Every structure is written in C-alpha cells, then in structure tokens.
Image 1 (tube, helix red, strand yellow):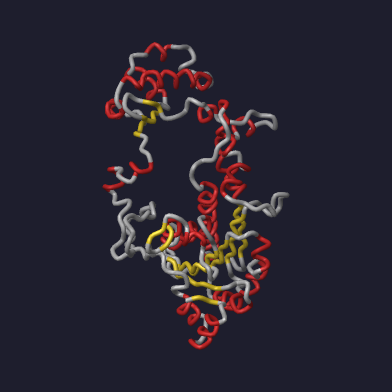
Image 2 (tube, helix red, strand yellow):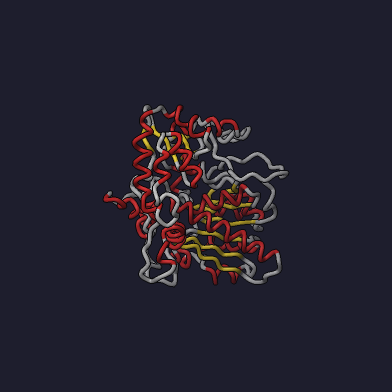
Length: 395
C-alpha cells in the first residue's frame, strides 16, 4: 500500500468486481476506502472457491479497505451513511441509477449533504440514451459493445472474452476519473463534481479504438482493423506446443523470412508497400503457420529471440502461476501476516520509484470496522449497540 492518496476518504458502495476493483486500486494508492456492504455482505464474499477469509473473487478485490455493514433501506442506515458522507471526499457506487436514487445516493441528494463531494456512478449505460434503464452485467456489455461479435470474424460464432472485461475496463475509467476530479479540487475547483462512468460506452470506446478505421473519415467508411480481425491472427502450433509470433515492422518480417529461408517473399512488389502488405497478411500468417511445426517451442523462442522478433510461449492459467519472470519480481508474494490460507496475492502492478509503501492489509470480515467508523461519525457505544440490535448495522 502506497502513501500517495493519504488523507483522501472514499466511500465505496460496490459489489462483485466493478466497484470493488476500482476501490482496491484507490486503496492500494493510500486512500482510506470505506466499503459499505449490506448486512448479508457483498455476494462475492461467498463465491466459490472460498477459503478461511471468504471467496477468492472477494479476496482479490477488497484489500486495504475498512469494512462497514449497514442496511441502507432502513432510515437509521441512511442516517449513518449521511454522517459519513459529510467527512468524505468521494462517494463511488456501481448501482443502477434508480436504485441509488431510492437510497438517497443520487448526485443531488449526496451533494446536499456534502457540497464538496466527488460523486462517481459506474453504471451500465449512459443516462442520456435510450438504454439508460437496462440492467447490465459483463456478458451483456460485451455483447452490446461489439466485443462478443468479433468472435464471428471469419465465419466463427460470437463469443465472450473469457474474463470479466467490461467490469474491469469500466473500473479503470472510474479510477482515472476520480483521480482527475481530486486533482481539480486540489487546484481550487469548488463545488460538488458529478462523474458518470457507463460500462457500455467505456467498452465500446475501448473496442473501437483501432476498429473505427475507415469510419473515422466517412459515414459509410469500412470499420475493422484487418490484421487484428484476421482469423489467422492466433497462436501457432509448434512441434510440441504453441507459440505467439508477431513480426510487425519491415525489419522483423525480413528477419523472420530469413530465418525460414523465404527471403523471396520480401521481394514481392507488395511487400514494401504499406498500403498493399496488409491485404496479404493472411498469406504471411499462413507461411508462419506452415513453418512453425518444424521446431519445438523452445527452439523457436531461442531463434526468434536471437533475431529480436516479438514472440512468447502460450501458457495456460496453471502454468502462468509458475512463470519465471513473475517469480523473479515477486508478483504473487503474500505480504507478511496478510491472511491465513492465502497462498498468492495479486499486487498493484504499477511501481513508483522512491515511494516507500506499507504492507497490504487483507480483506476484513463483514462489518469489521463498523463500530470504529460509527464512533468516528459521533455515535455513542450505546447508540451503536442499538443500531446493531435493530438490524441496521452489523459488526
């Protein structure tokens, strides 16, 4: 945990991945992130597989946070949260807008409590469009954004990217938006700041970055970046496994063709024409696919590496756990005293030279900090006991 955001208090009302992933990044940078959960807890706490501290999905998205459990449907729970909002810099949620409004967590209601608040709502679809009230989950956003449809290129079937892509992309957008708002406020911008992070628009922008292509210039321009959409852009089979190879520049393609004894291809009239060579990319990929089974993966990695041609082995998830580079940088190392039953931890992957951090704090139990936080909000011990007994808070 790094001290870069010390003194910043952020209320995270999030569940599963989008909200918790963003909150964890901000907590890793030193913000005081207070995770507000319902009395039954974030559903990811109970997701399979689970260990002593809860579900793996929860443990990988909720370190370095303080935990507060409140029933926000109860007036007493909303009153307690309102007191917390007065001393916070940011309120971040990933609920549907109508649900947030019913709980008094819409922008206007929160800004009335704290006129300097940064209010960030990560939602499914932008509120200015016709999809604004649609429910949204990762699969739905992958489909709506066109990501799933990319799998149909070359005659295949649409398919989802097998990771929770939309949630994590939206979380990254939420983090930079919150950080930008904090900078603006530090430079003197007054008043509450409203941020809307729609998953659909975030993933559509992410996907179309290269695929907008010809439509950048004309209403009826062709979309799609040909090399990326080629069905032959894939890992290639070797004599004993798989390898990814990407000759990209002229030099790299010439080096690869020399390695396989096909310098004649580099003498084709289209080879040196940057407008023509993309039309022959499948021809080039077919050549790669034909020659790679002649050697082992290890032999290809050595030969291609010697010629500085981009390449990589293709590990499965299990093999990635034993990647030698990740081992050397301590990627999976668990902080001392982090948590019993935790064999690996996923780090903050960004390094800051000269910034000394402190050990990460394992995700804590449901309501582990409820009493302390309610005391900080001005509640007496007897009042806290009454909230717990009434089922408004859990500790």
